[in-house]
Amino acid sequence: MSIEKTLCAQKRERSGKGPNGRLRARDLVPGVFYTAGGENISVQIPALQLGKMYAEMGYTTVFNLEIDDGGQKSVRPVLIWSVQWHPYKKAFRHIDFYGVDLDKEVKVEVPLEFVGTAHGVKLGGMLETYRETLRLASKPLDMPQKVTVDVTNMGINDTITVQDLQLPANVRAVCDRNFVVVGVLAKSKDETEGEAAEQAPAG
Image (cartoon, rainbow, N blue to C red; front, side):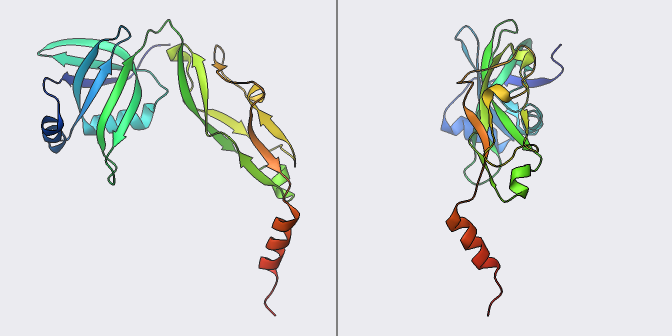
């Protein structure tokens, strides 16, 4: 497996509130690239290209960061580490990348996607999810973008634990294997009576 996507950035010489604000006014996003060796490189990235890469890769998929330093370009495999957003607009304010060694394991929070309608819900139960993400460990190129959890066959009082999940080869969960991620609960007597009262015709 190889890295297919590349994001182009320029090395950033100045930092601070004023210079960063001027970058954003030009639709550039200030950021920092943290190398595996502990070096920090300040960068700036066009907001449009960054938005496209973020939408496609999220926090789980490796891509190349090409850094232009005065005409000299270097390419590093990276993951998105953290994003700061504008308080009320869907706009980047700052982004951090961290460099990865493709031969060394990384640990990443991967989204869980729950699909299907549980049989137990059709019988009157309630689906309760206990986790929205799962911390996984693998080499960078083996990391999945998401883990799909099919709840269709779950009956009332059934649960799915970490050890029940179908993880890709060479990927492991970094948590207790017996941790419950989703369950179907029987509704309590009060909840059942409350719903019946809401559905009763007004007299």
